[in-house]
Length: 265
Length: 333
Ligand SMILES: Nc1ncnc2c1ncn2[C@@H]1O[C@H](COP(=O)(O)OP(=O)(O)OP(=O)(O)O)[C@@H](O)[C@H]1O
Ligand SMILES: [Mg+2]
Image: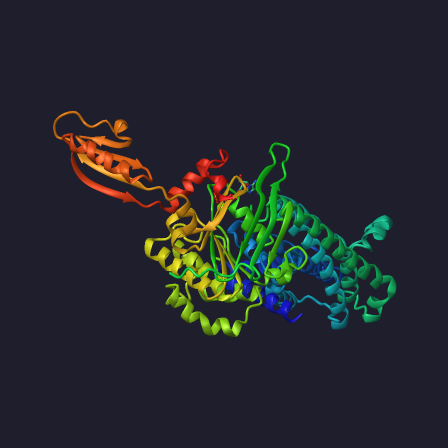
């Protein structure tokens, strides 16, 4: 565990250092995000008649956005890190270590999230303050929901990592999924209909968004989140997807190791 | 440089047992048998140079040992550990410099690269921190501590990759073409470092296309051709096996007909403007004197007589050319 913490920290520090090497790029990226959100919120102010609805919509967009960013930080970040590692060549060097390939890749996904987490939180705070978004921040509920949603995303990240090791050109696939996730992120705030509800309950991402909406917008408390009917699908789904991610990654990694694909791009 | 032979009953740092790798075929590709039944041991304290033409399977072999490629058959032991069953323990004893410019994170500087890659193999960071100023100096990288890897020259990057492998203190070092593209001085310094690494008790397996490098640093030479290990012998023994005496005679013929080399039992290497170079390949001293006798009666003036030493390059070329025909090679196996 201590050794794992050591390599996690090494990867996180390396990522942070690399990010900070390009402060302009880095700074403008966050400025764009904030301006983009600001634009949307101002647009809503201009076109939607004032009222309770307005606050709801903004909050909804905020939540959808934050979850989508969360996805981008984890899955997308990790996939691109792996593609870059294969292109610049150091991925093989990183994988030629005493740790299993699975451990190294999970570490890379975690590090990719950790190194951006501060900025993620920063954007959240800026949005809340700047655009007057009214949310109920219930720490206990958030600390229950986010890790489970993250476990799901880790599973998804492993699948993408495996795909990029074995198939290489996965950017457009990643792009499509990114769009789908965006649709789900924002769509989940409405209703899916009976069938949709049944399906999406078991996908941790959508179930997570639902619960977040309940907490952040409607002010539901921890007891609501922890209710088995709510928590169980989220937890089970998260564990199942993570396990699926592990299995798929292992299979694709072995394929790449058989065909000698790891160092290619 | 020292050439201490290590006792071969000692536990090898690397042991390959009938190691084979076939890259599977696909829709439009044929399967490639890149490595075929290679048996090899590398002992602590020795440098083994792995030589072979392009595509012989050297990199494939190295990558299997690093756990980046799955062997089709055979086993790999690093120290006492079987790579397949005890991957983590096995790979903890290994440091590698992969082929090409692929061992660094370009956006990190020299110091950051060292600490990053040292952390990945669980090296003692306090030790690495205290040792690396001296190591940087040794590798000619002092003053570059804060330079990003992408701003280093190719040779400097190669040195940094090697410094990282060196600093991890692993018992087995795998180096895939470490001297490629280095200037003479840098290459020599790297060779010294590789030799010293082995002399300090570590095992080194190094691939190279530069025969003089292999000849200078290796205790034993492994030659691999089309995936098969053709020979694995001490350098001296290989040179001895191919120790034919070969004399080069340079002549000048001002007037008169030039001597007929065929009749003299020699081979004409070059003839231009009355200058001739003959080569006599023989173990029989009598034939050299017969040649000189024959020349005495001609008009030729002898400019130079030299005895050629066989070198590893020549041995290598002979072995590769001979592979498949199996003439001299029988003696090697
Ligand atoms: N990923 C791969 N898929 C299919 N064939 C491959 C792959 N990698 C290498 N090969 C083939 O395997 C053989 C051995 O290649 P390898 O890279 O091991 O040679 P090498 O001895 O390192 O050559 P060089 O001296 O040029 O570096 C070659 O025929 C090569 O085309
Ligand atoms: Mg090679």
